[in-house]
Amino acid sequence: MGRWLSIPNSVDWLKFNNFGFNYGLMDREFYRVQLVKMLKDRKIPIIMPAKKYSHVKRRIKNYLLKTAPLVSTYLFKQKPGAKPWQSSVNLHIVIVGHDDQPAWKIRDQFWKKQITYDEAIHQLSAFFTTLDPWKNKRSWAKWLTKTYKIRWNQETGFSSLNRIHEQFRYRYPTVHLAELYLRVMIHNGWQFYRNQGLKQGIHHQELTLFWYRNRMLNQLEEIIVRSSYENVKYLQKRKRRLYFEI
Image 1: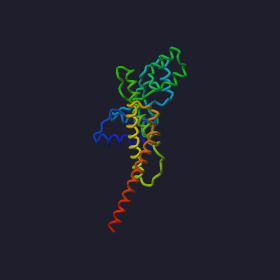
Image 2: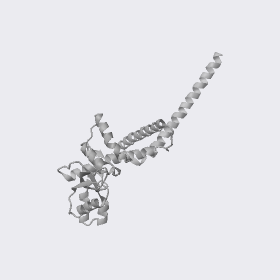
Image 3: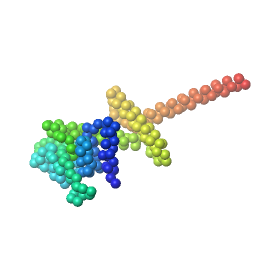
Image 4: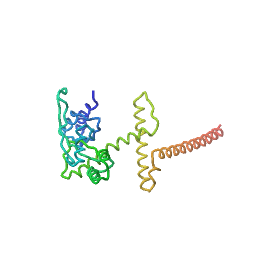
């Protein structure tokens, strides 16, 4: 059973709890006609990186050769005979560039012979979306790329959580959940520490998770040593007081 099947029900539950949706940022893993159509029927548009199937490659190539527009329509449908029934939904294919480069600038570089055909094709990609395009297609393509970075940043954040400390296997889910909360707290602390350091002009290489973790460990060791020393002094005083009371 596909994991995508739970998404429409989750959306309905969130809407029932008064959550609003402007759009859904979807991974290529959820490239399913039924899912996109169900979300569109629920008035939730999606933005998804396009897998480079033959029709997508053809659109990118035609755009590079100036025989296709930046934004084009596409009928996303299942193969004939799909069960339980065949679904289809209209999408927009939007050509974008890698590394914050606009697609039209890459195309201009190709026509000015600053880059080769293979280099230009490698730097171009595309998005699928059910959003209605703006009047200014170029601004809209920039907005799509910038908006989808939200999902990339979330994925990077989860990767950072897994690098905070060594993972362990737990028998009880509550302990596993507590460890996840601890990772999130450490990650949020690191982000705050990093932002403050950047504002003070500290180089970003000195504000990595590795250095933050070492700094935090040193501070914890100092707190533990100081606390242990104070506890020993307290016990010594307590012992002396008891001795005189006897």
